[in-house]
Length: 481
Image (cartoon, rainbow, N blue to C red; front, side, top):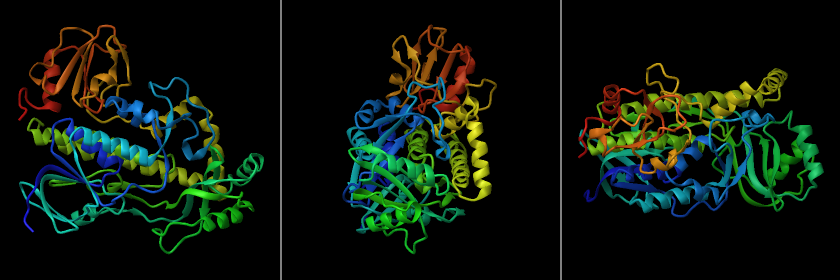
């Protein structure tokens, strides 16, 4: 079959990462095709948590209100290994909470957002192969159709076809333990549930029954190894494991969804080979401890989107796209390490239990609690941009400004010069960088240059220094094509 359609970017996988990436690219008028092998949305309703940094990114793109309407706010404590801890005081964010929300809702809202911006989506289409040359990538679909694209991005999950076909290594540790997770109706009295979780939660971790309301509970219980993890668990599997751990099955019935997960931990050796890139679970997998996986993928997408768009539009400075891997892969490696640590703290042996008791004491210190919460929620990330200012490389919170809030000025996915001096200008970069003069802005520096992902690329008050950094991140003035 002949190649008959061409695109700027084809994204394999229309989960949260792929849909977010498509929307980011469409903000820059990039022709995007999203391919999703599933024909229908997931039949189960799995609740996930959007952490602070992801909520901030949604606010930057004008999506937060729609997500808040469909979710439930929860405190920011008790993230690390499930150790009880209060929310840290005065977190540097306008969104100091976790948003519990059904994953299908996140996918639907992000897909609708991408489509509204002009992305094309095809369900029931799977990438089975591709070949790249110096100019583009030829993508083969399961039905034999061939498509041509300037770039291909694999957002197709842990068993990524794109990653395997690309030949990128995925080293790490295979799963050692299995855990059942689901949402079920529970008939047992709240007093019995609380007593059993308190009694056995210390020796059988992860183990919990957490109420959602209406008798529905999130149920997590350790399980033995299985021959095929792709086979979904049954209600009887849950009943059997609950009886084995707690001596009762708590009267569970009428599951909304059931799944199993292991603690496999893997990180792709490369995030890019030529014109093919990886993001989300295609690039990294880890246990769901701390609820970081979906968030990590969304943040990959926002880091990559404007860089890939700049490359295609012709204004990206040399090497900009190459910053994707050195910025995001160390973040993923840190997430893998903290989930490894959390899993050890959830082990039943005397050594891990002793360490858990010590960590519990340390988390009682506000500085330690804050550090771990900032790590899990990704607001502590700092990219290495060089320079002396502590702000460089960090994200700027959603400041209250004279003209609304800061993130309202980032909805278009462009850079932003926030200027307290009133005399700086983005000049020839005004097609890629907006300027906002606000002498009363709550900044400790005269001005900041923000990248489209909200990270601080420059601080100061010198126009010449500013232009050097504008060129570094946004190319030469007037160079859009």
